[in-house]
Length: 395
Image 1 (cartoon, rainbow, N blue to C red):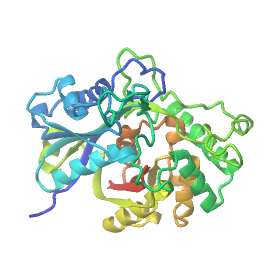
Image 2 (spheres, rainbow, N blue to C red):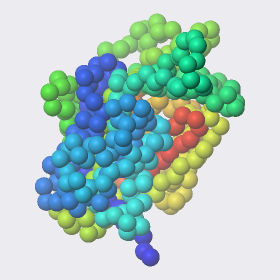
Image 3 (cartoon, one colour):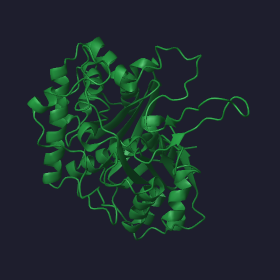
């Protein structure tokens, strides 16, 4: 059996909303349906009934995104009921995992046309109440927020592994000697690049406003922030001697992204020129408390599979969960040109809606390669509980 080439024909996303912001009254399944419908509308030659599967990443799944949000998006987007949908969860890597799983199905001949993407509404993530160990339990019961991080942790799990995500970023800063000033400077540059990319119209091909919501660009960008303002922010996770603040971390966000993937036959059916071709991917594990360094080995493995190395990259979208985490990864790739990393800003500025971020990164790389006309691109994310994920694209 021959392995088929897999192409990205199109990639779209919503503007990313901040926590309790513009999308506070928008359900996650509606956000997902919006980007799925947009892909179909932007490819009028493709009969929607030809879509073999819709794969969506979602890191929560405890609220309005329950009951398989991918299938909900298919139905809400008005696609034929014959189009199936499946939801996957690799936490922050969920959106990229969806792209990888859909591309693998196409490469193996199980699909010809697929939609892959991700969605998250951290604003609307519910509180959950566990059932008591026995009926009619006396005393109070504890509600858990499902917005982010550990909850209802297994007591058998090592306490070292279950530190907060922010403390994990502090550990990366400790390991690589990354200062508060370096983290703040990195964050400010992310905002500067994001604001400039929007002003230059670079996001126009991929971002589609959600109907009825007055937000034309990503809501968390703060181009007016200054080093002095950043320096006033207090460390969040280590009050004494900490370096990680709200300013040099990604915010809590809402949003959705989706890509249209095809083989050669599917490409002819779309009547379009592809943005890029998928070359290779990799997923790796690491000690859970060092999750921020998860992309290091995943990137190396994906590039090896593609027959490329870091020096070959023309663009690299690295998710910025924290400035410390991004800088820690960059420190372990000395041969990488930092100028190719997040040229249009990263998650510290644009936002990090967990299940959607991987799909956003893959779409961003595809659009950047298409704009350049040729090159090799890579998308990668760190993942809570200690994993890394990477995808190599070419044009």
